[in-house]
Length: 157
Image (cartoon, rainbow, N blue to C red; front, side, top):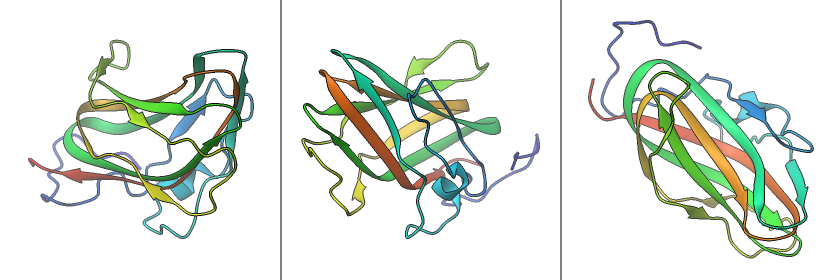
């Protein structure tokens, strides 16, 4: 779903709802990405996973809001790594070419198997049309991510 140019949204409205993100860079990309923004935290994407031989990129999740937005974001996810942990780092862009870090590094924990329950990640702010969640391994291993819900609440119409 694209937010039409000039459309106002209410403060607190989840403008990510219905926007299907895209994934790239994974050995196995997460499937069913529409479940990440369907408004139902009991549904989830499929498992995205990448095996690294050291620290490095696990994969990316991209959101296109259709226009520049000012939002507070929340991520409900399961994540694990068999030998080390990994991080999710949000980046924002106005033009889709130049990205700037837009939030704190979200350390995903030290779970070495699927924890079986969704866990909240840190809240971060975003301004721009595009949001990239950069998943980064802090060491060698197979690193996995499942998104239960991504929420982007409008803060300024």
